[in-house]
Length: 281
Image (cartoon, rainbow, N blue to C red; front, side, top):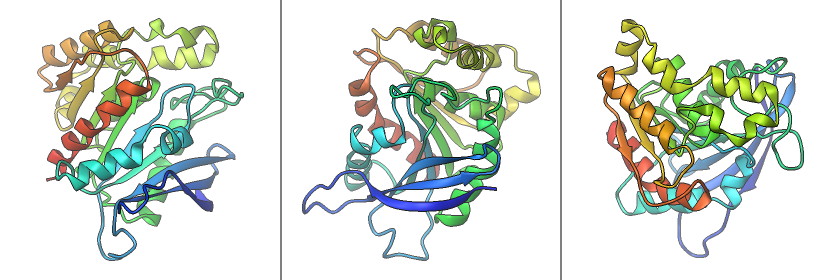
């Protein structure tokens, strides 16, 4: 069972412009027998409307970054504020869990969202973190109002989680996700357990080999993928989208001019907020 240990302010200030707030939580996990952190974005007036509940979006960071990266560098707060202010998205709580590696580059042991020997991250996430968020934050705790997204490594995990736990999520989105051909990741040579976890959770193969019952479950989720035309995972994205369509599973696919990196992911946030909000509404 997870419990919150500390809560601190996080994110950026935007002067006199009113917007949401960000806080960083440290939790104790019985499953992991360790402390983990997550960033939470709260929409404007969250504290002033104590009876109101909100949809929950989980966003998974890329390898080499952390939950804090998205609070301090990746402009998550301003993207969410601007999307709501413009009327293109509904207010939502956004959770960014930490799945960084143990070394200074955040690429060491225990990297990623998949379970590896001695580190059952998937069980922590689904049996501890989601219930904790639903209990402590004012989320609308049902499938339709719980969505999941991620970038690169996080994009693979977001899609794979939705595939394996379709009862949890109403929609899933990947930004330059490793959703096909995971062996192309340059990081697979750095950690054997991490490499095996990427390959074992290949979303493209999951769709290709899905049973009829699994296909029907996948159709209960709204799917979205976005990948740059010069991204080194573009072929894997093509493969994933084609496999989805061959099984009759609707998916929205975007390909913009760009490469695998922070700028592409930042500019891809607003369309994802809009896509998720359409499902909430």
